[in-house]
Length: 151
Image (cartoon, rainbow, N blue to C red; front, side, top):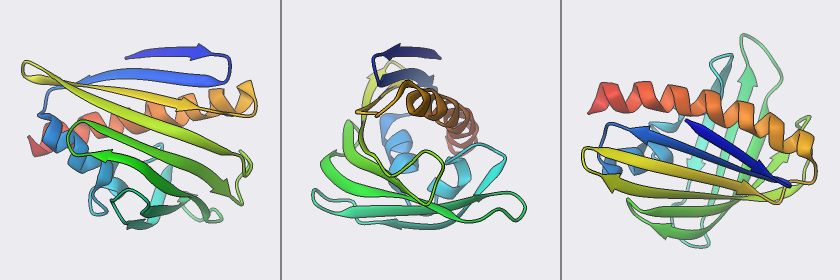
């Protein structure tokens, strides 16, 4: 995995030995999101996905075993199945603060692998960016295990 930070933008690149359709499904399916989203020290309690331009999502999670719930939510800006996903990202009642940022996930099939490039931008501070780097990196490790299991 590669991580690049420029200003208040985070870029992560990860390759999965799975078709783009499976990776995209894992990124967007409310039944699969809880299996990989967030670090392993956290659990997803609730997922709502309205996967269409203008649709919204909401994910509620907490630190295990009994942390206080916190939420991330936003609106889908671009949805190209198996290729690209762009959406807004805003925490509520979380230490990272309520600033709205933007997530872009681009998928490219490279032979038997799919490359996922995540660009998370518009962070207010480098500290927010770095905290999200840790969260996304841990999540993508879990995503790797999930797509390996499903493929």
